[in-house]
Every structure is written in C-alpha cells, then in structure tokens.
Amino acid sequence: MPMTRISSALVLAGALAMPAVAFAQGSSNQAAAEALFDEGKKLMAAGQLPQACAKLAESQRLDPGAGTLLNLAACYERDGRTATAWATYKETIASADKSGRKEWAAAATKRVKALEPLLSKLTVAVPEAAKTSGLVIKRDGAVINAAEWGLAIPLDPGKHAIEASAPDKKTFATTVELGTKADAQTVTVPALESGAVAAPAAVPPSSATRGASTPTEPPPSTPGGDGAASSPGSTTRIVGLVLVGAGVVGVGLGAVFGLKAGSLNDDAKANCNADQSRCNTAGLGQVDDAKSAATISTIGFVAGAALIAGGAVLFFTSPRGEKPAARRTTVTPILGSTSGLSLQGAF
Image 1 (cartoon, rainbow, N blue to C red):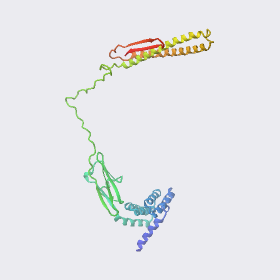
Image 2: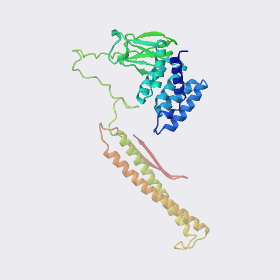
Image 3: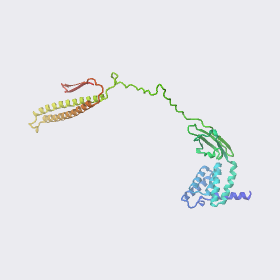
Image 4: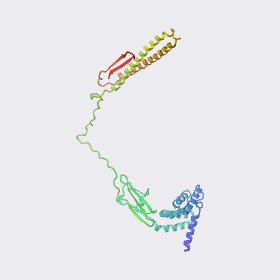
C-alpha cells in the first residue's frame, strides 16, 4: 500500500477515535454531547448504523465540531446514504480548516472525491408550459427553490416523492426510486390541469322583468279558520281571557272555602267556650279545620283577583285588527256533594 494511502487512513482512523469533547470546549452542552458521541461510536461499531447516526447528529447539534462531523459523515457513508455523507464531508472540510485541523480536512476531502462519481442524482425539470402563477414544487415534503429546477441534485438512494401544486390547479404527484450507484433520473412536471369549479355566471334581468316587483307568497291562513289571517292581538286576548277565567275560578274557590270555614266555626261553638280558648277534642279539630279553610279561602281570593286583573290588562291592551268574533263566557256555580264553579266560553 503506498505511504500516502497509509497515512490518510491513519489520520481518518485517529480522528474517528477522538471524543467529541476534544473538538468543542467550553460548550454548556458539552457533557451531553460527549455522552451521545460515545454512544454513537458504540452503536456504529455494533453495526446499528441508523441509531448511531442519530446519536452523532444530536451530539453535533449540541456541541458542533469538526471531529464529530467527520465521524457523522463516516456513519452516513457506511449506512448507504451517499449524498448525505458527501455533503457532511464537505461541511467537515470547512469546519476543519477553520479550526486548523488540516489532517481532518485532508481526510474529508479524500472521501468527497471518492464519493462524487458514485452519487445518484435526480433532476426536476419544469418546462415553460408547466410554469404557472403560484407554482410550488416539493421533494420529500420540502419545497424546492426555483433556482434548483432543472439541476441534477445528489440524493440518497431510495424512493423520493415529487409534488407540484398551484392555486386552482390539480396537484401532480409521483414517486421515483434512485439506484445505489451513479443513478440519474429526471422527473418532468407537466402543465397542471385546472381544478377550480367555475361559478355560475350571473344572468342579467330581461327588459320584461326589469323593475318588476318580486311576488311574495300570501300569508298562511289561520289553522281551523276561514283563510283570513288572525288579528295581531288575538293570541294575547285569548291568554287574557284564560287568565280571567282562572281568576274567577280562584275567587269562586275562595268563596266556597270561606263558607266552609264559617260553617266549621259555627259547629265548634257547641264544643268550645265563647272565645274558643277551651275546647274538647271534637272542638279542637273543628277549629283547626276552620282555620285551614279560611287560609285557603284567603289564598283563593288574592290569587283570583290578581289573575283577573292581569287577564283584563292583556285583553284590553292587546292590539286589534279586524273586529274579533263575539266571545261568550259564562260562570256557572256547581252545587251538590262537591261545590265549585264551572267556567265555560267560546273564544
């Protein structure tokens, strides 16, 4: 083996063996970066390349350094991600030159030259006919700058998704698979088909209808009526009449229980003294029943009067349209085993 090749291999091996702490002193994340670097090296030695590359990439993010970059590029290369390895080696060259690590820069340069003829490339061609306002082209979900259209871009081997979209256009999407070594493929974006739904054109009014009023539907007839609309305050007046009727019932109940209270009080006189301060057992029961009846009578009179007053206000203050049909209300007393009042009417 020539001496130049031996020395280059020794430089690369020495750089790969050095811990990340040697390349990034003073960083607040140095401890975590060093632990990640060590774990990445172990995983790479065990052949667990995707996990190893992830650890090394995180170590580089926390504590950037040319040595970590060189190890990360080597991991990508072993994992078959040739384009990513090539780009990382080139980044290593710039970082190593800046830090004065000439041997690392030389090792990275050698790997760049070795990988370049092996790179697989994908060209996304956009003909003039396909260029439209708002055109956006994506590769693997990331937007491709217009400056990259038509250029052969090195990509890692494997499948890559291409998508083109624009306002009011149907989206074009395809997938291409690049080979492992020096594959070159082209995806040509077609002119996107229109995907907008045309809005219906407005029809101008004709001379015969211009200025004519829009017909309206006749008002619905009142259910059960003769087809004429009910007067504006008919519902309010009906509610008022119902309240008046309920009030009359309340007053009637008050009168009935008032009479009952008086009757019970008269019956208690035979079983109590004059001022009802002393009563026998029967008298005490009669006095209590008389008091209960009197209470109900009072409630009936008060509630009935309030309902009559409220109903009258609603009835007489409601708006009136056409003259309402005659209403007839009668209150009939009910006498017998059960006393009370009957409310009857036509509304």
